[in-house]
Length: 127
Image (cartoon, rainbow, N blue to C red; front, side):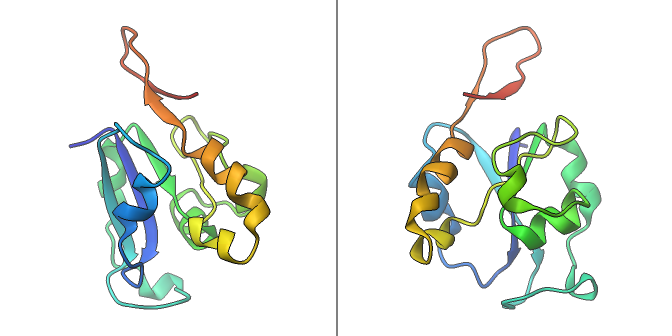
């Protein structure tokens, strides 16, 4: 199991690894989906991911507002973009937002600059 898990809202995402690798290289990670069907907007009843699976990861990166809401139980993706919540969740605005708001690309890059620190705990920290 990897240390980092990116949680996307649904499988409607096309090539999520390409999206993440555009900003992030050299970090092993897993990708999970809250909903296994192709849906633009998910509701609580659509979630079929067992959220207990996320407990073993050191860092869970909810991608977008829906993922933040259902994994970390909070809202405000722009407010919390790149800020650790509960020392485990690192919310990231959905990278596709730059198609609409290109000025947010720097914020997304900063949030995705993750690297493994070489310390005794082998914790992962934000650069």
